[in-house]
Length: 388
Image 1: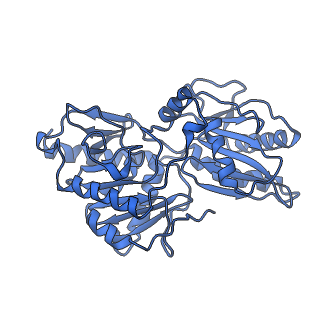
Image 2 (image 1 turned 60 degrees about the vertical axis):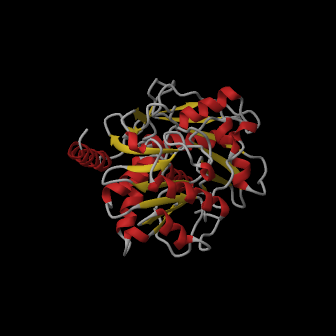
Image 3 (image 1 turned 180 degrees about the vertical axis):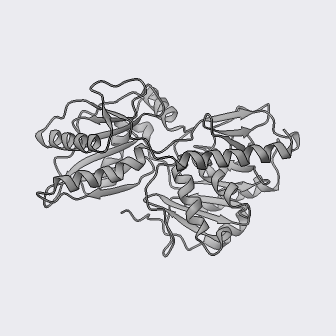
């Protein structure tokens, strides 16, 4: 493919992605999986179902193969696992705790994996009634308080938080093409910068250890989770740097960011996005078994396409005071999050030297080069991400 063809194709891909995002999110179909084990959970499920139907969602007593949303309800001591028939199915695990845990995120997070869910909604005792706590795979967490006599407001608020997550469009498929130029099979100065940056981020303690899911799941379930979320592994943080107008190098999913060495395995060339699949297109050497690229590749692609002056991007699970932030906790790997971050960048005085917050998740940092980003942020990031 010539440079001219690549530019044309990616310009068209950006236009199609923006067209898709301009469409109204689908309300779609939903079902309820499992029996509520208590009166409180039955009240919660019934209220959520009424709100979904009121907003135009179509209830199916039994799941159809391409069901859009599954409310999977189960006792906290006997989680139920709903196995999807289609990648686009969004599963919300729902349960309740008999007592309030000391650390809500730590107590709730494993239920994502127990239930093989995209999101868990856990009812926790509060002063005035149950609190509904959202927890996402990216460690986003926030609670919604119940006030006596305000059931309608409670469920409407939950819906407003739930719908953007369930209606988001994932881009986690990868298409590998063995068309990387031979002179790049061993990398270049840009990949060397990325490799050095991974080591520096590790030294700054900005790449926290992955959640120990292997201790919670069998090998079969762990493989299912990796396929479900489009992950080559489970770890946090990623780095990328522009190669040319429409291509960029990016760290692979699940790799040790302090040991980014092999091209096609640890660092990959993102050469495009195909909105018809949808999928990230990767150019790799012919002699390497490639890993999946980071799930955040669509976000980086959108930023590079809309902001051609940006040369590098770092994403870490940390925070910085006084920064602009996205307003909705969209899942990683979605077109919606990609556009939200790119649009927020456009509001910055200098998008090439910006720090953008991803609500309840972390920060995306742009720069002219990878080295320049690390010089700017050293000693300025806060490890704890604020939740709201």
